[in-house]
Length: 203
Image (cartoon, rainbow, N blue to C red; front, top):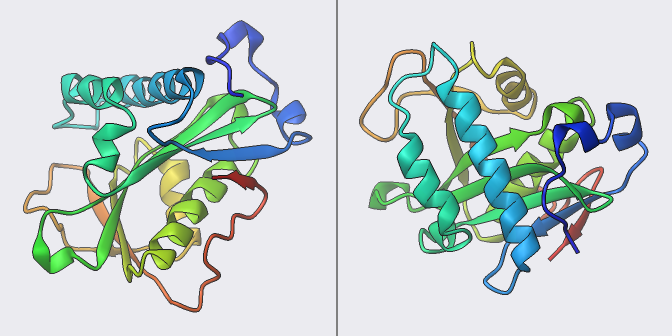
């Protein structure tokens, strides 16, 4: 069972994390209060990081707080979901996804809110989370995964997306704030569904 996020003083070192087994827990309505609290804390950490970046514009932290408060419903009601990743019950990462309201994008999902705690970066956690969303999209019959990012503020995430086959595209939501770029990955049905490298997936 997941415990609430540890303080920075209790954080696990990167060397320790590399020796731990990752567990990816997809949040459900039946998820424990501890798991939901951990996911909420990670999501709010993501928001605080984003608003601290001078190059990021048009980000509403208040809306994110509402999103966090209603986890997991905030994504389930958008025909999506969210995943919490733990290492020996220590929450270290979060990602979410949703369907888009545009009927022309009914074949697509949007990846959202990828966040890895600093002590867990470089351990493959981010790649495992993105792959978990890709696997679920393929299993759901989707053929496209979309996202937006700010490369100067989120350089490591941007590099990861490119390494995993995402390419730049035009905006898909009718707006393009300064510094934001839009990426897409065409999904192949031959990709192995529900495969999560470097991680054990807890459904």
